[in-house]
Amino acid sequence: MFKTVLFPVDQSREAREAADLVVNIVQKYGSRLVLLSVVEPSEGESANSDAMASPEAVAKLLKTAQTLFTDQGIPADVMEREGKAAFMICDVADEIDADLIVMGSRGLGLTEEGSAESVTNRVINLSPCPVLIVP
Image (cartoon, rainbow, N blue to C red; front, side, top):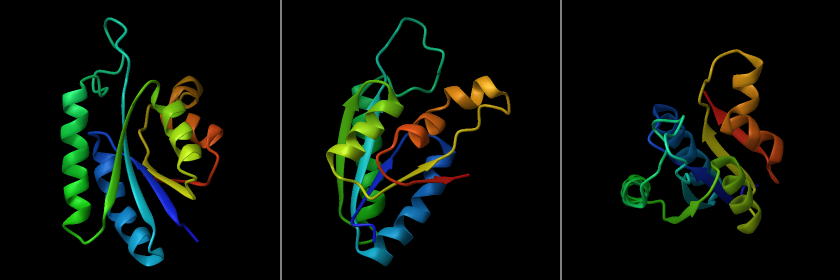
């Protein structure tokens, strides 16, 4: 059912919590797992203070995530891209023919503006495949 699962990772607590669900899905369906991290282009002072702006930080994060899965017997391919996170996630999902994107939700508040601007919301609206959001 889910031949290829895309798991965008960052340093958030929500991504770490989503990892457990990814393990279950990949093991149950024998899926190919692709880990993705996006380096946000720097625009002076970033509004998102925890944005993955350093290629070194991204490489370390991807290696740590890959090790987490390989320690559980799950091979994981890693990809690193530069750009706006939501668009890159959807582009990679299309490129690898993903059957599912699993990602943690990042609550930006209950305002309509915060919801419309979230990476999660944009991925849901632009994704070429189903998106599973882990709260």
